[in-house]
Amino acid sequence: MNHTLPILSAGLAITILAAIVTNHVPQDAAKKQLATNVSVSDPPESAADPGPPPDGGILVNQAASQLLALPGIQAKTRQRVDIFGQHLVGSGNYLQWVQGPQLLLRLDLKLQMGQQVTSLQQISDGQILWIRTDLPHRKSLTRVNLRRLRDAASKLPTPPPPTYWMALGGMPKLLARLAEDFTFGPAQRKVIGHLPVWKIDGHWKADVLNRLMADRAAPIQSDDLDALRHLPEPLPHGVSLILGRDRVIPLFPYSVSYYRFLPRDKDQPKSAPPQRKAIATLELFEVRLRPDLSPADFDYRPGSQEVKDQTNQFIAQLRAASSPPTTHR
Image (cartoon, rainbow, N blue to C red; front, side):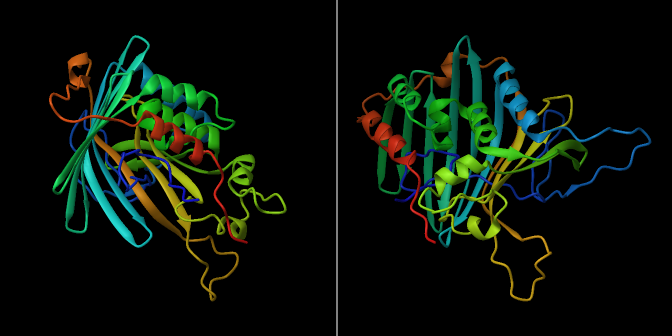
């Protein structure tokens, strides 16, 4: 069975994935725009003792909750994917606004793979998710009933994959799912330009990893690198996050990362740390608080365009995605 790495459900044959490149991360532009290719570095030493590093898992959970408390968000986004020998890049805009119990979401992307450019638009008013795709010589418009999709997700024996983050709760849901599936180490204090951030690394929780590799005879530990390398591509070996450490938008997720470990070189000492390869990238930058957003920003009217209801297909894919992939020993 083919499984895709969670992050952006595009409604396309291609799935947008997420990862981080720690020397290419955007900064909060509520103060100013950050130039690209800025390195992540250790902050200068301070005379004041900052105390022990906080628990990364606690920060990830707090970040998910605090996103829901913000009045409205607008951010530019960049994505890069590098799997199966394919390189896919995309850029666009992300909107998020809380209206009572409803979380309204909008994602507008331009995707490029080779010479082909695709436009993707996903708009959710909390009840319906609209997915509009503009391919060369072909356009499509899909709608998904979110009540039915969430009802199906609630009946799954395992939590739904974050591939459905736009349908099931946007960036807050994505972070919450990461906290469920990964064990995070202590948060590291870093600085991007002049912006203080937390860098947090996580690895699969043992029970989740064993569900993903259910065909193996013996249970495995999440730090067993030899066993991890049997995870089929593009399932990751680990995840990294960059969360804001400033007071403008505390704990904002500027970057989410999934990576795989590279095969160990035969001349590399066994004590040497394994090298990583980013398999995809999601970056949020030029972040602005937008309390002035309104339901009109998330209202989609299809007009005369043909609409395909793919709720049943999404539910079937959701159930199939909850099954563990077949691994190779």
